[in-house]
Length: 135
Image (cartoon, rainbow, N blue to C red):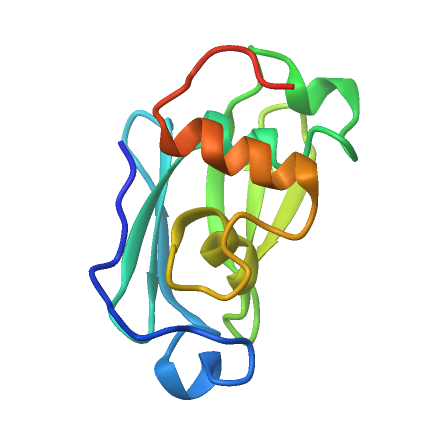
C-alpha cells in the first residue's frame, strides 16, 4: 500500500525546508514489517512498501540486500531527522534521506522519479502497481 500527499505546492530543494519537507517528524515500520511509514514536519505522510524501498539499493547492494528473504527489522530517525536508518535481517543498514522519499513518492517534487533513467523506470513501474522482478 502506498500513499501520496495531497499537497499541491511545487516542492523544490531550495524551498523544502520552509515547506516542512526536509525533516521527518516520524518514521515507523508496519506490524507485519512489509511497509515503512514516514511523516514529514509538513504533515505529509507516505507508506513505502519494503520491497520497493529495498529495490532502491539494488545497484549498490551486497547480494543479501536484494535476496527475497531479506526483511526490514526496524527503522529509526537519525540525528537531525533529515534521514532515517533501515535495519535489515542480514545485519546491514541503509540510510534514506528526505529527498529520496520525495523522489520516489511525491509528484510535486522537482526531482520526482529521480535523476537517472534507472530510477525513473523504477518509480514509474511502482506507480503503475508493478510488483514483479525489477530491472
